[in-house]
Length: 288
View 1: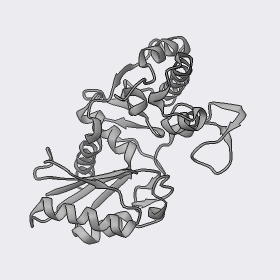
View 2 (view 1 turned 60 degrees about the vertical axis):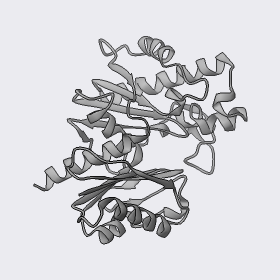
View 3 (view 1 turned 90 degrees about the horizontal axis):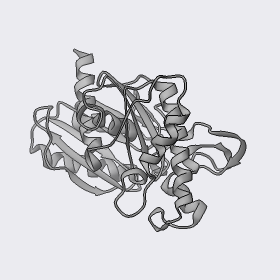
View 4 (view 1 turned 180 degrees about the vertical axis):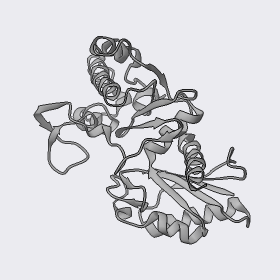
């Protein structure tokens, strides 16, 4: 029995896989502010789902930078009381089984690469633009190696001016996350993104997204880019027009003969659970 979890800033999902290939209906609950309560709720949900069957391994993602080896949250932006807490250690003690933890974007991206929009491609870049912005590179169905995860929403796109970003208490050289995310829209325009109907704002966002995608292509050289998040595929109102971003991108990429395939994410809210299952499979293969 494998236990899968997806720890977001708002909700936590826990699911069980009896065979390592599929999983059943997840249990979803609001993310507790306190770390100990969060662990307790995850374990309670897992115990319900496994019905007394021993846990062989567990895996999942959590919002913010993570030390994958130690399974410690380094700077969770929406979970300050979870910072520096031993997530991996606590769950391993509770489950008496190995636990694998990584950044939530990385896990969702892995899920999209193996079971969603990137399926069938050897080198996949996943990019998400939602409340925040981030991305991950997946090669041959496995997360690309890294020291502290990936934080592409905080690469610098303008070093001539500074703007307030979520990663710092003081203004930084300009990052994509400070312009095209949901939190950036609320700060810049004092409105929810779905309330904004000014085409110029959405066109500017498409141009900035194109810059982000250009840099992803230059840094990671993917065969396919899967792009998700509420600012791209949301259903509550206007979103960043991906087709317009691709038009801008066509004129930006000059060193490669063509841009890679760009597709929307397919797995929705369950990408993290698919990714957790894929992470377990890849980690157990390494152990063997």
